[in-house]
Length: 274
Ligand SMILES: Cc1cc2nc3c(=O)[nH]c(=O)nc-3n(C[C@H](O)[C@H](O)[C@H](O)COP(=O)(O)OP(=O)(O)OC[C@H]3O[C@@H](n4cnc5c(N)ncnc54)[C@H](O)[C@@H]3O)c2cc1C
Image 1 (cartoon, rainbow, N blue to C red):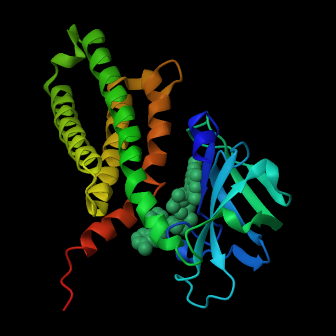
Image 2 (spheres, helix red, strand yellow; image 1 turned 90 degrees about the vertical axis):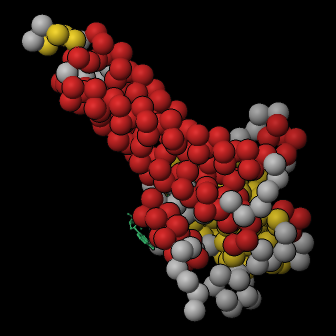
């Protein structure tokens, strides 16, 4: 799979189900071993590129393991090589419209047993390891949006005039810009630090990843909102990029663990275990 991905094949990650995304352990998709194959039944929602991906990393529960967390397992599905992989619908979204978001169903979908990653029941461990590595990329995505919105806001504030002055010369607007510039610098520095930790091959940066994802995505939403405000009415119409940045920022607070879940993870890590 990896050589194909390196050549440009598309992958998708399928965790979320209709029963709830925050509680991944509630998933109901089933993996039933049958000889050299695994039979998959169930469904996923909100899967980015789920309709066009060449490979799907699919989480489900191994039949025969009673513990709901211990049963979670991970399979690779090659979309075009299997039967019973169905795209039920494509979502119409607020933002992030350049990529598709699909609801999927698996009906008696047979996958070679060799496609199981690790052993039955390894899924949760693999899930956490994967999310710890991918959350910094959500932070980078969010900071890209925040940086773009900041640039647009500053440029507009320097060009636009009101009451005979540039709007950047009003102190209220300078305070908005000052807060955004400072918070952006801090969040970018934290992400740089975290990437250094990851590149050094260190383990155990889940908390730092949560912090980066949560702060960067909240910042993207705030700066995109401030950028619209700085544009006045023009920020609300589609002629200016800030309208799109605002819509695209929102998803970064939701996916890869909502920010409420990240706050809970970070806060809980400081609770003493008596
Ligand atoms: C455009 C888009 C693309 C996506 N792409 C993918 C993808 O490729 N693969 C994939 O697997 N999923 C994907 N998702 C799903 C996404 O990760 C989930 O939507 C997200 O994890 C939240 O799950 P939920 O929507 O079921 O909300 P719920 O889990 O039902 O949460 C609803 C609300 O309750 C809050 N809440 C829930 N539990 C707690 C708690 N324990 N503590 C505090 N608050 C809580 C949440 O913060 C949220 O505000 C995508 C979603 C969207 C919208």
